[in-house]
Amino acid sequence: MTSYYQFPSNFAWGVATAAYQIEGAVNEGGRKPSVWDTFSARPGAVLNGDTGAIACNHYHLYEEDVRLMAQLGVRNYRFSIAWSRIVPDGRGQVNEAGIDFYRRLVDTLLKYGITPHATLFHWDSPQALEDRYGSWQSREMAYDFADYVTAVVKRLGDRVTHWMTLNEIICFTHLGYSHTGTPPHAPGTTVKTNKEVWQTSHHALLAHGLGCQAIRAATRRPCTVALVDNPAIPVPISETPANIDAAFKALYRLGTNGGILIPALTGAYTPQLLTDLGADAPEIRDGDLNIIHQPLDAFGLNIYTGSYVRASDSDRGYEELHLSDHYPRLNMPWLWMLPDALYWGVRHLTEALGQPNLPIFITENGCAAWDTVNAHGEVVDTERILYLRNYLRAAHRAIQEGYPLRGYFLWSLLDNFEWAWGYDRRFGLTYVDYDTQERIPKASFNWYAECIKQNRVV
Ligand code: GCO
Image (cartoon, rainbow, N blue to C red; front, side, top):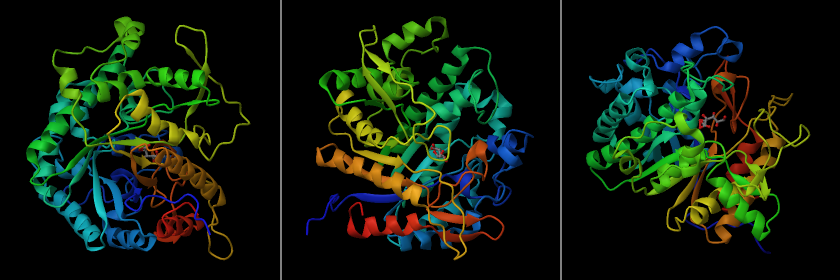
């Protein structure tokens, strides 16, 4: 019998989480507040007044959670390190108790044969730096980030060799500071001009570049360094040469790609973006683009959805197609079911950006479904299986066609604190009963375990 959708034997199967979304224990082990503690405490900022104060209590239950991963069969785990556990005031004194937590976690992972992939920043910046200079509004943030990275890599670089600098720059810059953006994101500061918004993402790019340099300078072992981004992914409405060409053009312009993905990978902002922004373009100092454009060992793509485009006679050469209210969605307003985005995301990086040898990891993919525990104590999340199966088939296609897709981290191991949506939206393979902290593997957990076991989409 033929086995369909078989993956290469060295394909890296994994799951992903982030510190503030799962750890809880916000006042323990010397941790000080992050902007997300402050933001979520503000009435009306987060749905139902939820905060990450307890979350999945992973800080205490990490051993149980690593056992869950072992049961799932993943050999790779992407998690994030909380800056304010390591350097509670944002700069200065290193808190060794914070390091110890991640050392315990990493050692447990290694004991179970699971490779740790650490993200150094997943949105929870120290409140102290928000108070001092407005976090990403200041260029100083990039330098403080690099010092924090040095502190981490010096201490954990003997056992962690896969590093990711920043997660999804657009979310903690444009969605955090934009005067037009909704929903609000931490820290909820509304700056006055679009130029100031673009300045925050420019500072984040600078932090990425300085962070890469800091990792390479501090590591004691050979390691890999990556950036994790969630670019807007143009998907040709049909695969004609003209529509494919339109999608390649759109990659440089859609969303904020031209000022985040493109400079990170090519060393230059999309020129037309800067022209269009005019006086709203960020200040880019001499040498910044060289710092930002660091050689990378891998690139992490978070892909949940995409945008359909087709060829057009306009100056841009493409047209973005509107999705109607009837287009299938999972349980988030932005979560359009668009599996081909995964294939196109990989292909765009390789082809449109001309990086044939850059290993690509899907660092997040997953969905919120409408999970409930049934009378038998089960969560039968068939919508999630439908979603994942189709996205993994698109991943398979990319590999079949020779694109360098090396691994996949499903978001997420557990239901968790979904930012401004609090605990209302569940993205986990494992259901979390927040009253008891009981973990209940969903049907999708068993489905994914079988995919990993058979090394194919089942
Ligand atoms: C991200 C987010 C995750 C979200 C997930 C679902 O990196 O996009 O960081 O933290 O929980 O994307 O919205």
